[in-house]
Image (cartoon, rainbow, N blue to C red; front, side, top):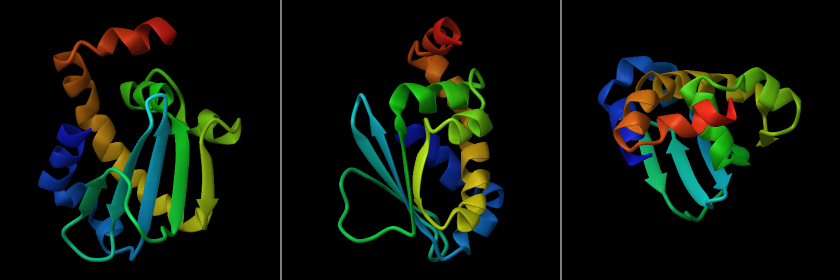
Amino acid sequence: MQEVFDYVMEHPEHVDSFMHSNLVVRMTTTDPDAEIVLDGRQPPLGVFFGSRPGRANLEVNLAADLLHALWMGAESTHQAFFNGRIQTRGNLLKAMQLIEVFLAAERIYPTIARRYGLADVAEESG
């Protein structure tokens, strides 16, 4: 994840509206448990790994395998959201600005996943 978000931060043009959104998003995954906080209150994009104090405007919870499959293109984000596999808490209208961060992550994630031998995992489950 560090490499994914390093890429996203190196290409701020891909996440410009999120960086001016004044949003803090907490993304929590299960199996394995992880927490990523995206801070769009001011440029540059802040990305923090691990438990962080404070409240987020939007919380997104999903299985780590599902996030992997989404970013590999093996699963539909739209379907996962509407069938409840992605759970959110907070203002969903504001969540639309998070889409550009996910799209930027999707651009680089398959390359990084392959580097670590993780590409086959999504292909087997997809």
